[in-house]
Length: 425
Image 1 (cartoon, rainbow, N blue to C red):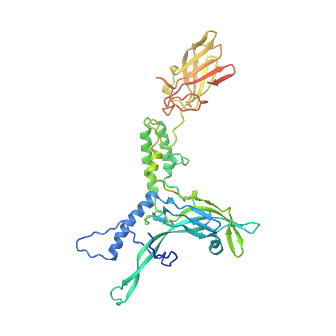
Image 2: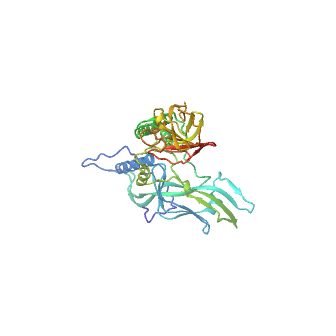
Image 3: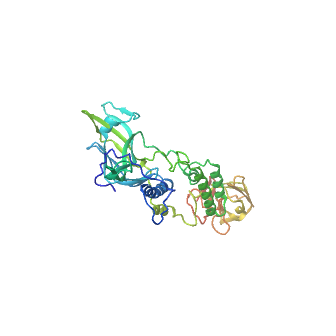
């Protein structure tokens, strides 16, 4: 934690370097003489392991708090307490409210690339974003013994390094992620268009698999392996961390300032958007959000729509029945359909003598044993029972398209054909 005698504006900030080497550790033995280099190695090993883990396995993001507010009465931007990780795995902690005078920043420190719009009343508007960056400060000066052969005078050295999070204001909108990691996995779950050949193959394999959960798992593992092969540090393989600039964008601000004498003051319509920041979600929450799909409907991304009965058209002894999705040919037979006609004494059965599935798999032509000469005619396509129609993806027929509901166990679809054409029941 910050020590009491630390001066935030001290010129000792930014000059300190922390030992960092996650792959070299001490090997202690009895009677070993320890020096500064050994203690640096000890600290650098553990610090390096933590930062390396944070940077590659978690990435940058706010953990809690760190809300950004504008207080026009005080002419300030305020960063509230909180915790985050930067792009290089460093912990960014803000212990107290940190404030920045927005009017003074514009008058004295605005960058050359800030795009400013001057209004007719003399006020100005522009877009900026708040960044949070890591810095190290030296603290706790203590007497220090000089190195051998440098004389016997006592010097002063700092005995502490304090890690801080320093907010700053930068021109323009908050930057988006320069490269979205794991593109193949994102394509697989529907977050991006499917353009990668490996993902196209995986989607096709999942759609036709007998055991979809097992195929999904195989595809997930394969695509994850390919995505990790493509991951490299921004500065090349010699760098430990993913990015060069580890600073974290916290908020985007639409600023409106007006002149007031020799200063600029914040206008009330200045707005802050805290949603532009990357954020971390607790592991427990992720588990509870992901592990909610029932066992009978597993899948990565949306479950495909089941086939439904769409329309029917009767011409003489030929009855064409249309479906919303391709059907599994092996399930298309005369026993999957029932046709009846309403005569003077009630409903009479009409035998289906033959069926023909079209090349697309979405239309079935029923050949009837006789031509119905009365109306209405009712056709039922089986989605329930022992011989249901199945879609090409293996899901049973799920009723009528007009109903729009999904019944995973299957539901019959029925249409009524009268003189004006078929109407869904």
